[in-house]
Length: 350
Ligand code: HEC
Ligand code: HEC
Image 1 (cartoon, rainbow, N blue to C red):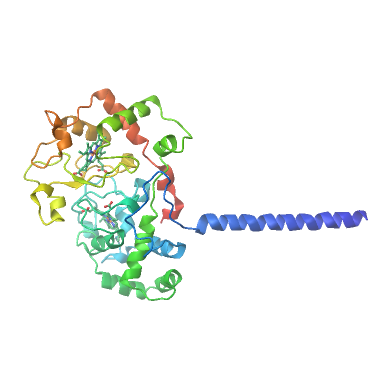
Image 2: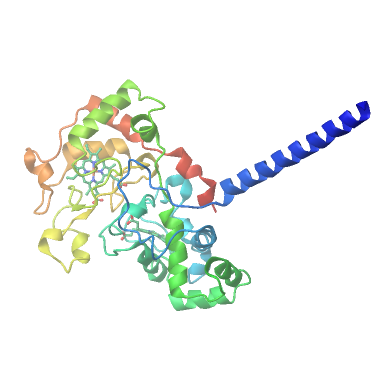
C-alpha cells in the first residue's frame, strides 16, 4: 500500500514537472518568436503604413533584419543600413555631422533616428518619399551611401547560400523580387517603436515620477516647444525653418522635393525629439553638437530669413527667450525621452 502511494506520488510529480516544463517552453517561444505590431494606446492610430498590403510576421521581419544588417546591399559588400543606423544610438550614427558611406564618402545630411516610422507621412529630411516601403531604395542606390543597383542586390541574394530559403520561409517560395525585398525591410523598420522612455512611464503609465527639474522642464517645453514638437510623437511632421541657415541657403531643403517652391526653400521636416539625448549632433546639417547649444540656438542664435517660421518672428530679436535656469530644466526634460528598452531590445539587434 505504502509503496503504491509512493509510486502514485512519483507519477504525479513527473506529470506536473513535465507539464510545467512544456508550459515554460511555450512561454519562451512566444517571447522570442512572436513579432507583431502594437500601437501604443496613447499614440495616434497609424494611418501611413499599409498593414493590409504588408502585415508584419515573424519570418519576414527576421529576413528584413538580416538584410538591414548585411553589407551585401552595398557595392563593396561593406556598408549595411546598420552601419549608419546604430541601435545603441536610436539608429543614428553619432559624432558625425554627416555619416560615412561607401569608400568613406560623407552623406549630404545628418542621419535621422529610425523610430516610430509607422506614424510618418513621408520620409527623409525633405520628405521626398511618401512610404516606408520605398525608403530603402534611396540609400541603396545613393552613390555616397551604398552605391549599388537593386538588380545587382537581387542577383547577389539569389546566389547566396541562405537567402533563398529565408525568402521562402517569409513568402512561401524562393523567388527573390524587389517587392519582397522592400517589404521585408519595411517590416523590420515599422517595428522600431519607441514608447517606453521615462516620459512615457511618468505621463502615461504613471508608474514613476519626474524630478522637480524634469517636471519644470516639461512645463517649459509645453509653453515653448510643443507647437512644432507635439506629444506624444514630438514632431508635427511639418516642414519648417528654425533659423539654422543664412540666406542664400546652402541646402534648399523641402524645395528639393516640391519642385523648388520659393516658400519651401530652407525648410526641413521637424524631427521627433524622442531619444534626442542619443542622437547628436543635431539638425539636418549636424551643425549643433549638444542639447544645451540647441536651446541656446533657440534663445539667441536663430537666423532671420525670408522663410523663417512665424513662431520665431513673434519677438525681436527673433527666437524664443530661454534663461539659463530654464535651459537646464529643458535639458533635464529632454533627457527623459531616452528609451533604454528600445535601444536594448534584442529583437532589433544585429
Ligand atoms: C551612409 C550612411 C547611411 C546608410 C548606409 C543608410 N542610411 Fe538611411 N539615412 C542616412 C541619412 C544621412 C539619412 C537622411 C537623408 C536625408 O534626409 O536626406 C537617412 C534617412 C533614412 C530614413 C528616413 C527616416 C525618416 O525619419 O525620415 C530611412 C527610413 C532610412 N534612412 C533607412 C535606411 C535603410 C533601410 C538603409 C539600408 C538599405 C539605410 N537607411 C542606409 C544615412 C544612411
Ligand atoms: C517653429 C517650429 C519649432 C519650434 C517652436 C521648436 N522647434 Fe525644434 N526643430 C524644428 C525644426 C524644423 C527642426 C529641424 C531643423 C533643421 O534640421 O534644419 C528642429 C530641431 C530640433 C532639435 C534637433 C533634433 C535632431 O534630431 O536633430 C532639437 C533638440 C529641438 N528642435 C528642440 C526644440 C526645443 C527644446 C524647442 C523649444 C525650446 C524647440 N525645438 C522649438 C522646429 C521647431
